[in-house]
Length: 226
Image 1 (cartoon, rainbow, N blue to C red):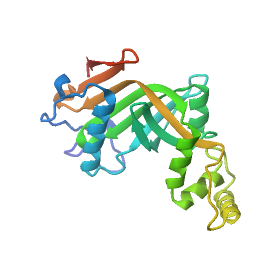
Image 2 (cartoon, helix red, strand yellow):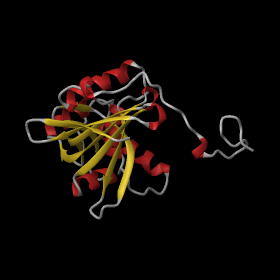
Image 3 (cartoon, rainbow, N blue to C red):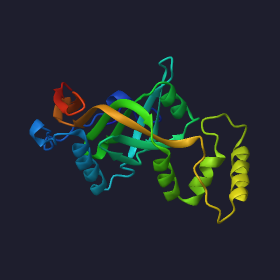
């Protein structure tokens, strides 16, 4: 039985029936955009923070292995500048090994409450060790211990194995010993080749404006069909 909102009553929900139209008061024109992706992203990121979105720096990171098999997950953006966007990970994790073996990735910022998203596609490079060390030192001590304790993405026999690893690391470093980043842990920077700014519009005729790198000096801005 289908309810007034298009959903099936009971335990079943029909995804195709879930529909929300977007407002028409937030159009995105070429004249609205900054001349470069970084300045435009900085504006929209500030908007997302000011709007009180939960985890505005959460982004879906898509990578692929050497054979082209993709995988995706949500991680937190930890920095950005004109060079690109940075997140940190265990280099032995699935995303770490894929990004290093096949150094390309896509990022998606799903700012749904604002009817916006940003899609980045580009190459991946490790950040230098000094940048990793600076960020790692800013993390809570428990998170630093966790980076040493977790063999990220590997199969574990049970939760106790992970907890025991954490206890061992905590005992090793104690309460005062400085904790350096593990040698297998660090930052990855996605260097944009394209950055698309998506603004929802009525009738699914969304605004999509994309920055595409033309050369080392500048960017081309082009409108894409929704």
